[in-house]
Length: 196
Image 1 (cartoon, rainbow, N blue to C red):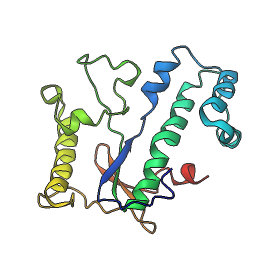
Image 2: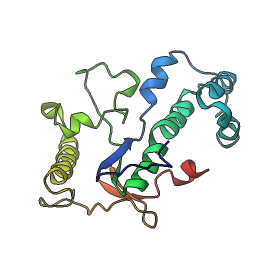
Image 3: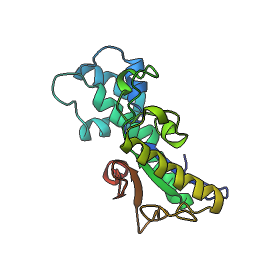
Image 4: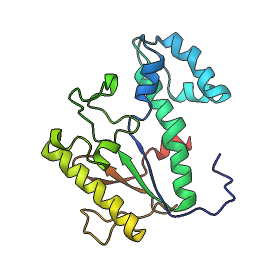
């Protein structure tokens, strides 16, 4: 979709969650998914690409295949297209893997203490501040500082000091800011999975 982009791309911050599709997969497939079910659902979701996907990602054991399917949907729908766009735009790209502990504030279901779709937002907007641990507050303050810097200067690294210099994604330097504890730089995130 983005590989033949023909419009001017603006500077941006773009990223994904490490378990982006987990809530969607478990929300739609409320019962465990057998290996045969995985091989049946796969072509519906991935079309003719599923043959190659199934060779690379065969069923894992004889139990529930929803974790595998969630990982594939996370990569196929969210992470890999985001990676392509980030390269095209030379964007600041991030991976958010820090878990959100909702402590019952919301009905998180399978996503409790995970990094599911949109779970960075309570950290960015400090929505659960009173319930945050010190580590949660560190992630929240760090995330908010990068985003505020970017809003002020179009560069997340200044004017306020940040713990790590965050470079734009480029073909020769595929570095992502990884929001975990501690925040770190991750190189070539999902490169082999997205390029196969």
